[in-house]
Image (cartoon, rainbow, N blue to C red; front, side, top):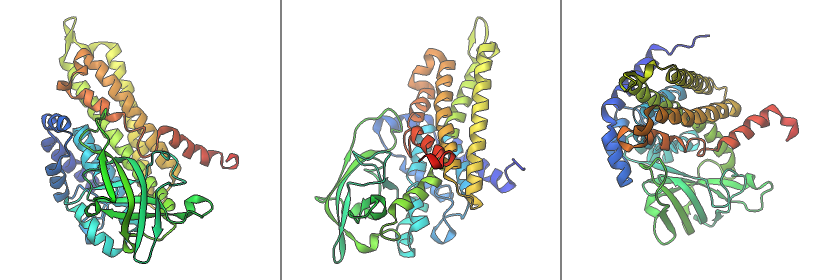
Length: 386
């Protein structure tokens, strides 16, 4: 087995690291966080260099790379700065729906504007009464002659207020049994916002403050029939296919954040002196770094393995769920210990590590909680028990 990245992959890693290290300024991140503002200029720059949705084919402005190469880029971005890295990545994450299931017309209209950095997008799956459970939707789309009439509410929608389009999971056949066989995904354009479509910011958050988290309210919104993504009644299956890939990307975010926090704490430990010598010389501190290093390496191997298998066509929910579960959890453990290394200084924004700690907390929650990932893994371990 070859665990080394190819030369092309190492070159991509180096390029992503150099770009992010140079452009993702921590003072800018803190300023944007206080303003609750998305880093539009950096998103555009990243897109121009081919770092946004690089798995998209050249036909729609992408680089035609794999999920593994994308994971490498995401890791480097989040390592350089957790807040900016997450914001830049999350704005393009929804385009996986279009790339995998959209037709040529839809991809030319929306996908090409993601890879150019002109558009950002949002996924609208979660509802007030349906968080982790998406087997039934209260949001309903009634098919008329020329349109769907979309009614319902979505919540916790990342990038909701800044998105240029939304991929909305809804019930198009309320009589389907089971319910999930009657779901579809509709593309809702930002231009439709008005009386029939409201977007409301939910408020201040613990972390990922460079992104918007919003509530979407649809009230008999007319959505053209051509905005149906793929086939009617396939929305649930499309969502499952999306998650199989997006979990790997979220796991890559986690590895990057953990590595970035490790880097900061490691540098600080060698400089900070107590009892007239660097704290890095104390065995208790050294053991913290050993534990962090092992966890990060294990998580990275899981993520790369999941991405590698996906690119080979060996798509597997269990592998992706394992990567997401473990990487998200260790990101929280590593950032916790990194703050501990900094001591009292780690509690203040000036040292950035506290921001990594806050940003990491979302990782075991969004794109499927850690508890849901365990259910996914258990379902494959004990299929006869379910």
